[in-house]
Image (tube, rainbow, N blue to C red):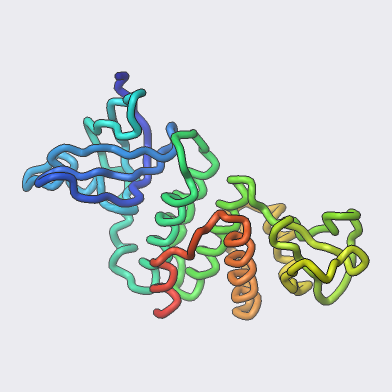
Amino acid sequence: MPLCKTNAVILGGRRFGDTSKIISAYTAGFGKLHLLAKGALAPKSKFLSALETFSESELVFYHKTTTELHLLSQAALLKSHLRLADKSEIFPFAAAACEITDEWIKGEEQNLGYYQLLTSFLNRLETTTPLQVPFLFWLFVYYGASILGFRPNLEACFRCGKKENKKSYLFHPEKGGLVCAQDARESERYLKVSADLKNLAATLAHSDFDSASHLEVPLKLLNELSEFLKDFLLVQGVWKQLPASLALGQRT
């Protein structure tokens, strides 16, 4: 049972017994982990705010090979992000990102790109304006799904490879790609994609989150992007249902 150290984002936690917690964390070195933090709820807990949701912390833990629940030894707070929980226009989107990560990531597999995306998103929320938050969230969804192998192809017809220049396009959510008029079939369900969304997708495909986060996107295009990603990821089975926190964010 080796003693391991890694940086992590705390996704959430639940009470275990009278004074302990089971923590879900996405780590730089081990992917998603579940950790037993003994005494975390005690009045003089050594963990303090290092285990609060959204916190970036350095964790030291005993890595067990016979179970998915590991024993936390130490936790040092690196960055709290507590102000995200105090802002009603930001909190739902930060919480939804943690929900998504907890749902999408199934096992202990290192993915440094995803970890960097999650920390970049939380850090960007600290400095952005409330109006920009929904766009940042859907960027997080787009890049997170892409890292995990679910990037939609809006460049050419997935059947014949033909590239078209039109005002609108047909997208096959099950196949994850555009389909040209000649290869479209009446028995299949398609999403309608505007030229603006196609162009935005091309920009995102050749950018990273940090650079794309400074784009200015009209509300109409943002709404199209969000509906497109919802439909695509639900059909792909990436989402079984939309995050509960996201519904809260849409009401604020």
